[in-house]
Image: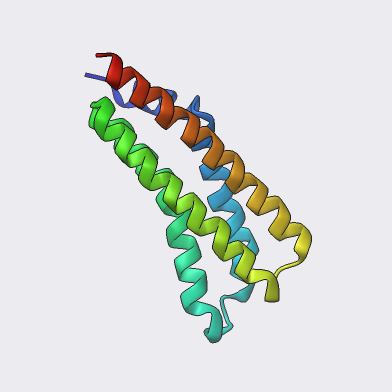
Length: 128
């Protein structure tokens, strides 16, 4: 059984997880200035939730201890990254293009890492 510090250390070495934490912090930074605009309340809440879901699903899958379950949670995290990226593109009415480009680029990096990891884990599962 992994200790809490071993689990935390493993996650902190996983690039997609580190980038997911960074992305969540940036979402909060980008959107908190709009918190008083009630017309954006739902969109902001959804963006917070989808960005949080990336890291949360990586954490949950990592904690499961099963390669198959971990892979499934990474697939879900990848979907959340895709959702977060798409919503950033729809925030074009409120955020500068440069911010949107940086955030969607970060989402693409996360998606690429997750895709490669999912493929590797599935290949390992098939080889069993």
